[in-house]
Length: 89
Image (cartoon, rainbow, N blue to C red):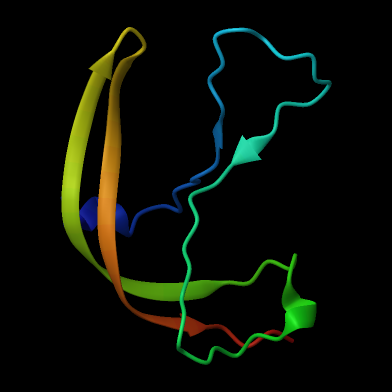
């Protein structure tokens, strides 16, 4: 199974599933969030809103499944062990 992880980039954005369609010209994508505190990263306040490439090492701490009318959904839990950023040119 782990071999499959390195074969492709996995996009994590998802569309919110509403029972009542909202009037919107463009459906917004939502992404999982991650926060880090008490650690200095090579980021500055002016970097807010920019996209960077990073490599993270994580430990899988849980995989749960939920079944519903739209099929099986998965919830994943991780402990992030470390993170590194690629230098930008």
